[in-house]
Length: 395
Ligand code: NAD
Image (cartoon, rainbow, N blue to C red; front, side, top):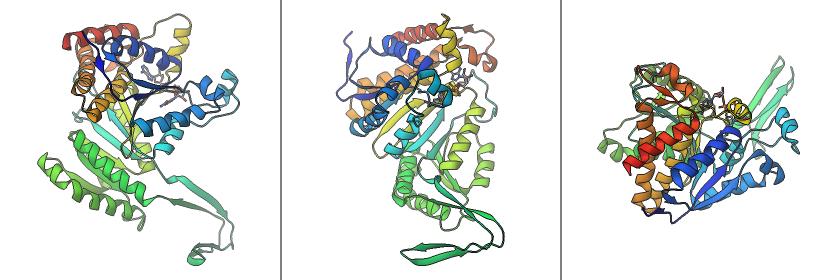
């Protein structure tokens, strides 16, 4: 069988520990036999980030901006312990934060759901995905201490706009966002909802944070006008809700909702959504900017499994989100290049993962939520082999 050709490259960001091991096996077993891979490779292992003084991270983000599509393996975020373990020059920032800041995109988190796996809220039959604006607000804030009797003045070009003179010791916070970034956030969210046929909810606290959250609201409502026809054609809804009301609506829903949130709200709610859908290994993550698509798994490098792997065990690590990472990158490359064969391969790869789990071949983390009577617990290599068997049947 002739291999599928790829005209333009996908940026590959390799990672650390257990996910690096699995990443390599996914490539070897599930991609290389079928596709003439065209990859722009960056090694984001902690050793190579250290050796390149973290230049490799920014180079990889630039490559995504150039080629439009990237797939990222999980990477270690350095801390004091990791500095000792790897004899690092310093504590480098999280690669995800560096890449996110460069691409200035929206972070999406979407659960991969299966009928055979129970979730905490059984009425959420369909996915609830999060679109988190990944720029600004409290993440660029500056805090100030203001002492009793101090006078703090906010001015623009020397013109005083606001003055604060407390008769108590106080703390003060400034934060900002960029109008263009909010506009991009809105466009990317509407486009994602359309591409996934999902309803869209956007929520803030505009009744309290007047002149700030209300700007987000106005931008979303205004941007919707451009997508209204397409939404109506597909029978989809868009709603703006105050965040407290949005939570009530979402709790009562059946799912199939993309919930767009400001930076902090998105940070908090993505973990809540992950917890409801169960395993982190069944959660896709992507950063989508103006024409750039970076896919990854939501989980980390699974250090505890790696320690056992180093001692010779083949752990039962769940590779679903990592396989989906590759599949989404390949599917999107196919779409952007008008390469139907490549796009279909990405779809088939996801389907073969579903077939494997629905047929009862599961990794250890899924046993407690599996609702069919019979299953076989497999290690990560056996799981990939099973996916390959199902993939071969589809191709
Ligand atoms: P983790 O996601 O690797 O693991 C958390 C827990 O979930 C562990 O008990 C682990 O066994 C389990 N788990 C996670 N993914 C699993 C999978 N695919 N199959 C089975 N079990 C799975 O997070 P952590 O332990 O907090 O962090 C480990 C390393 O990963 C750290 O160095 C951290 O900096 C890094 N990290 C990276 C990313 C990223 O690159 N996006 C995200 C989070 C953490």
